[in-house]
Image 1: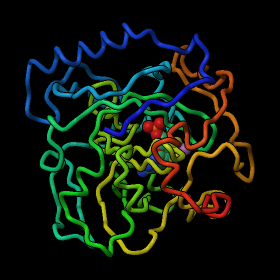
Image 2 (image 1 turned 180 degrees about the vertical axis):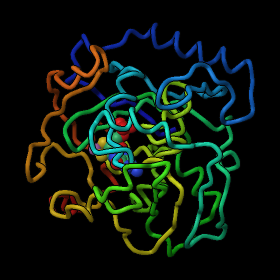
Image 3 (image 1 turned 60 degrees about the vertical axis):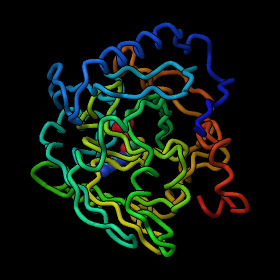
Length: 325
Ligand SMILES: Nc1nc2c(c(=O)[nH]1)N[C@H]1C(S)=C(S)[C@@H](COP(=O)(O)O)O[C@H]1N2
Ligand SMILES: [Mo]
């Protein structure tokens, strides 16, 4: 496995979670695994306002070493960007209960041998799921550390056998004004769309996530399935995906359509290239402790490629990152 953890020289000792807490959590997941289970949605544990909380039973642990304190479940599910449910940070948690993540179909289309519409349960089997702790850094200069549950995108892509003309992968979010009331407003062009170059899409870091903290994805975080591209700004990690297409040309992307001078196609986290209206040098780490006052956390240095440069800087060799931002 290519996954290696990054150095975190900037992280203060107070931000380090003790390994035993982490191992205990792992043990809990493994104990849960013994119970077995075959559906993606095996066990309802409790209900909350936005969505029903459901535990996966078979999550594989991976070789991730954890060195940074995780954002709490409450933190990552109460401060979100998901314009389909409103433009405010607390709107998604309040409004996303109208999303119905089950049953869920995904259409695979474009330049590949196998295309068609698939039920999510047929696309991803529970035994394929693994937990990966990745930072997510929003272009708005806040960040979280999240234990995602998912499957590398490359494992899905391989199955559909894209042909040599397929240079990019395009993604689309659901359009449904009833389920996603924010779509009644023109805050963005719907559907929300995103894209990756093929080599970015098949990089082993790129994850299709279906959960967090061993549980099914909260609606407000992009249930039932969203992308997580840890070295790019958060907006590339498109939520509630209904379509994946293999295409020849660079596909349009929502924030680039909205404000092309501010958001490029690549959007790699880069502290050396400022957003036209603010600096990207530092970020506020949202730990989730202390509720939403978390947004007042002190700033930490933003790392080049969000700390994943060892794995992905190679993809951009020879490219002028000021031009291809
Ligand atoms: N469909 C859709 N996907 C989306 C967004 C959105 O508004 N709609 N917001 C993006 C932005 S700007 C960020 S920072 C992340 C936030 O993910 P989180 O709420 O799980 O932290 O989701 C991204 N994916
Ligand atoms: Mo964002």
